[in-house]
Amino acid sequence: MKEALLGRSRDGLTSKAHLAADRKCRPICLVLTAGQAADSPPFLPVLEKVRARLPVGRPRTRPGAVAADKAYSSRANRSYLRKRYIKAVIPEKKDQAVNRKKKGSRGGRPTRRDVDLHKERNTVERLINKLKAWRGIATRYDKTPESYLAGLHLRASMIWITDLLKATG
Image 1 (cartoon, rainbow, N blue to C red):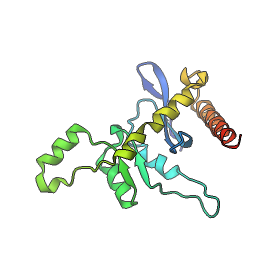
Image 2: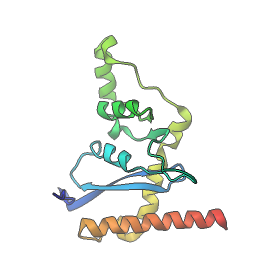
Image 3: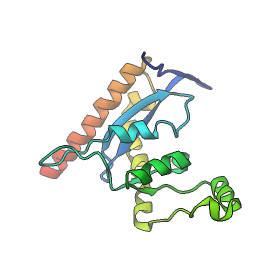
């Protein structure tokens, strides 16, 4: 059964794009959800779609670290990353920190902060700005989720091609 990718919001029917980017602000994978859906649940499907090709061998599916904003700081997301030995660079929400402190020693450890990786958390935001430089994506002219996702993939491939041309030329 196909999931409905158009969701109701204040502005009408919309879709929301969730994506992963590398350190050079290039898209690695895209997942589309309904517009009213929360941000945290698509975190795992996005990570499961990550495939980084290497010069030799099979693609790498486990990144060394994942940087995200506070919307993705749920306990389930953190435990998933911990089980796969992936460093989480996700700030803790204030209410989560308060609840953890209330539990005392049963609440667990506070999140560690890697300053160098924390500075790179804006790579996804910069990628979204690159995607939205294309007017069709910024204004959401496409009426169907399929055509919107196709536009996202087209713009993502254009970003990869221009980056490769810069590297070779």
